[in-house]
Length: 55
Image (cartoon, rainbow, N blue to C red; front, side):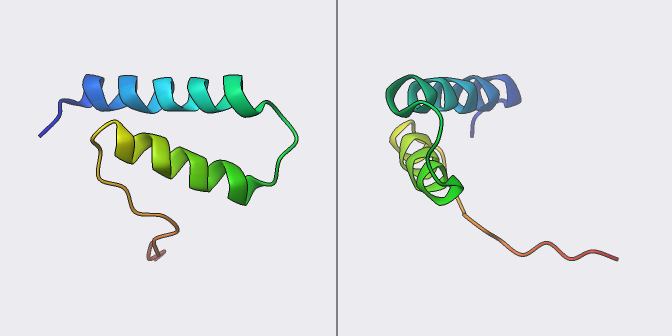
């Protein structure tokens, strides 16, 4: 299991790589798929578009 700081570091690094490679202007869905790929590649478990109950 990763520490919170390590998870945060991997998330920020993935976001930076995506922004650097793809830049602005793509559909949100494209960024979402790329972000999931980068996070999985870094060893994190990822779920997309999960339902969150609101009370």
